Image 1 (tube, rainbow, N blue to C red):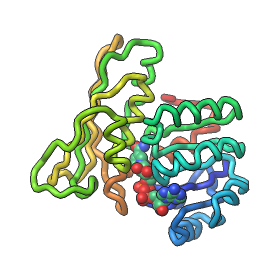
Image 2: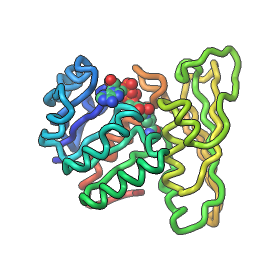
Image 3: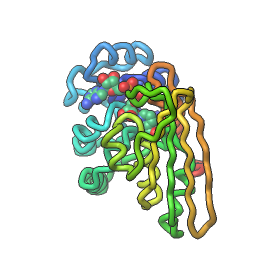
Image 4: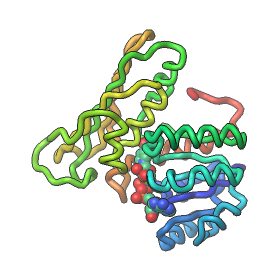
Length: 252
Ligand SMILES: NC(=O)c1ccc[n+]([C@@H]2O[C@H](COP(=O)([O-])OP(=O)(O)OC[C@H]3O[C@@H](n4cnc5c(N)ncnc54)[C@H](O)[C@@H]3O)[C@@H](O)[C@H]2O)c1
């Protein structure tokens, strides 16, 4: 069974620890040691108060569920220390230099970097962009203003532009925009709306190309403890980890 090290013991970390099945969490690390201890109590993992010692644990794969900043700070060291990595804060990879560095290091060390589908669906179709020309990708995301850390009584457009610029302004909220760009290889047209009436995180994704056209609307329930994070994102990591070693791979 795969041994998992959890980097980040917040909302997603708690869900992974509570629901681990088909893998075992052996090590946890968080800048907030109290949170790390809570998660360790849920799954019997060992708490590491120090990142270097965390990497000396017996974990085969590190699951990052922390922040864009944590990916910048730790991803390359994780690969250098001989571990695979799952990156949930994929927004960090909008930085092309960082992404290239991580990819090259993974190739050089023969390790893998997994990007879960997170809060969106349809990445499988977008990946056909490697073989068939995808010509246009549009993402319209709507969240409650509280998730975005702004105050408004009316539905309003808070951002329109590229995924890279959007994740810079909203690093906790728009990871999916970067995931869809990485999957398709096409720059997305991104809109972010704040809507006081929104009780779910809504992603409307449209893409078109040689194959035809896809329109997807995902209405995600926010996680109980962090309205910015969709519950689906935590579930996508559970699914990824459980399926890593399965002989039958579906929709990958
Ligand atoms: N790809 C997606 O679709 C998707 C969806 C939802 C969330 N996310 C991202 O996943 C991450 C986790 O989400 P969450 O809801 O669990 O967040 P959270 O804020 O509830 O928890 C994050 C935890 O990571 C810890 N942390 C942050 N930076 C750290 C660092 N540099 N070193 C060590 N610990 C650090 C924090 O102390 C906190 O306990 C966030 O970056 C979020 O934006 C991505």
